[in-house]
Length: 186
Ligand code: AMP
Image (cartoon, rainbow, N blue to C red; front, side, top):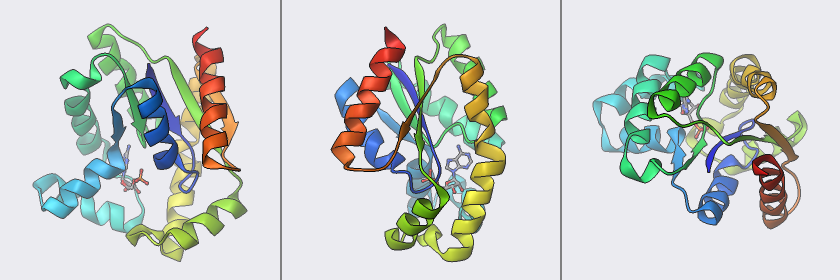
């Protein structure tokens, strides 16, 4: 299974990603987590990414795409993967297509977790991560609607998109994700 999870900040992508990766036995690749690890370790990549992350902006494609390319070329991602937080704009989506084509493989599905704005703000304000402060939340939502949301139509056009509501119990959302994805693969 080669799967992308997409949805606004606070939709629970990270949580669902863990469950889905376990279900399909594929590595969970979160670009946000990779950036945060680099930041904690003080690597050159982390230092470069920091100011963008602090402002709630996207890290430049040049840094992000290389990092993903490197991660996807590792052995454990050869048979499948779940990408969480990538692609975040149409250019990244096109670069990903090209990377996969180079490997002779393609995506199986793109799962959109949908959530309305009011619920997003409610969830993010209780999560308390460094980039969950009010003005940064607003910025991240703006970045999502302007830069990331267009990838949803991009994938809808290629017939890969499945959308589920990201509300309710975590286990129910996982179950509806798996049901939606089995429709996609059959
Ligand atoms: P996340 O944990 O997915 O919410 O990501 C946290 C932050 O990492 C984002 O606000 C961005 O600054 C950065 N980031 C994560 N994924 C990407 C990506 N695909 N492209 C650019 N920046 C990203």
